[in-house]
Image 1 (cartoon, one colour):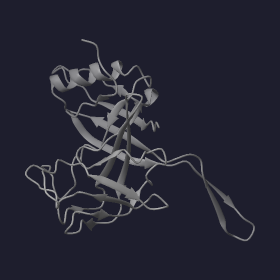
Image 2 (cartoon, one colour):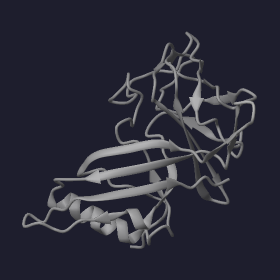
Image 3 (cartoon, one colour):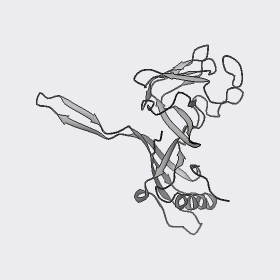
Image 4 (cartoon, helix red, strand yellow):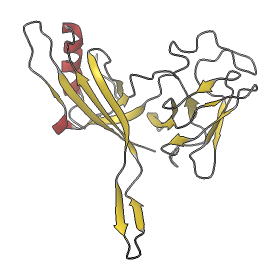
Length: 223
């Protein structure tokens, strides 16, 4: 059976992970002692994964997954493995009910954003749902039948109202390319990524058929 892309990334055998915003900013000192700052492009998520002490099946999965990405040619769904759900709900949202009624599985019923696009408002959540620092809000939509994603991280803790409306500061700002029809969601939020080939490698196989390695990837932000 042919593989389909973007595909999920493996999760086994991970010793540690970095998942942070990567910016390209330039500073220009002025004669009066002030600094001018210019950002070269939209901030993107950068992921590093260190593999260590994986069992044979986990090693096999990574050894097959990495070459199938064909370097940076193919995309995958990358995410912070340490935060698949908000910190306050580590097991997910099973059994939770929206404030207005109906089961809540992780997606807001609607969303809006301020003029600077750094304070989204989500509606249709459970009453008093709490999002804390470093929780994520994902946005998903399709363009021409192809999956699209955007991902932001909560900067300050805030809880939804009794009516299930949440608003809070995030970074990076919600990209302008995210359409109003996109779905805002809190369950396994991810983004489209591509491997950085010259920084990605799987180590030698030991006598237990296990291997370490390093996976490095950058977000590909597509409209």
